[in-house]
Figure 1 (cartoon, rainbow, N blue to C red):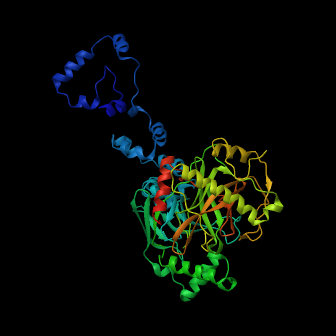
Figure 2 (figure 1 turned 180 degrees about the horizontal axis):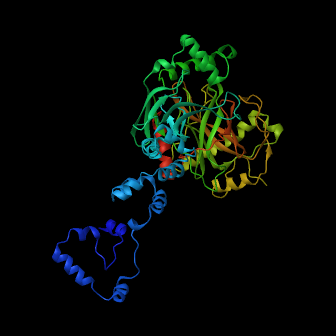
Figure 3 (figure 1 turned 30 degrees about the vertical axis):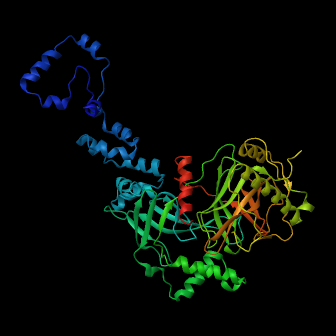
Length: 508
């Protein structure tokens, strides 16, 4: 009756219209005699007169209904036949499409195809709302970054790819993997966009919360007339921007061929798991987010930088056979600032190594005093990765907060790579803001014998940082992904941490 009272405008001196219709003659007469009172007394007892929603003109009801969330409108349609008729007005659903999903196209053109804005909202946008946002495909160690967006009258899944190695500063590349649109009033159509023969029949299944899968129903559209060789040459141009003859490193050729064989077997039949962008805090060293980084013969990979109190972590969104996607590639101790020597001494690798190893020894001693199990000293390996304060001293303050204040001060110092340290990209900044002690994860092929090794985190500016892998004598340069992602914020810091644990557990 509460809903009925709100909609019918019931006051203390008026009974519900529906209830009145069910009264007998005696009850009606009794009610009429009770109502036969002085109008002034009734006005005083009843208070201000209430206006019924049912008495409002249709155009005003359209404005009211159009301002409500689209998910509430089906319940409103069950109140009465008048509301149900008004809710067929396309103006209401056109506004919901625009305000909730950002559809800015002229939806009036849909009338030509016989598809209403209500159909677009209910059968396309609302139905597939759970797959909007960022996702990581399950492609073994390689992972990936999928962004599902509303694009005009389509929902499109764009796979984001790093720029061609070693141009870490170039913008991201992207290609469509699937699209969903409404071609007729019955239901939305899912199309696979993989391959070079245009869109063809596909299928999407929402497996469970934060997980969905895609399937191509016409994988013959992925094949090329020249067979696997032509497919490989085409993939190589798209993935690396070169031919196999241009790649002289034999190990790199093997890695590229291995990736093609592994990834092409999926034929765009993939399972995706939701990922969130890291939450930010005013005291963070720099704004967290997605970065492109150089990883030797593996090429460029996507890493998510996040802050956790006095530590920063880099988690792989794309990976390789050594360190797969989902693993924590670098960890930075924001309490342990490293003061680099002058440029001439910095060129001496042994001098930088001495500074870093001293910090590592401090960490080991503190862990022993705290009763933790420190990692034992280890010899350099052949695995792949993937005044001022005293050298290697612990910074006062709260770690992340003190570091963030220092980084924002804008004071820089000269930076140059030590002699003997290799870098895929020699176009790194020659001035840095801050340096911190950190560890990087290295492992053998197949993620065998993973170990954390000491290194130096180098902050260049708001959008670039580097990591010097001490034992590998290698330097990785990272550049921020300059893209805006919708529906990608974590609902809470706890949800983000849980997401990190989940994607890491898949490849541990």
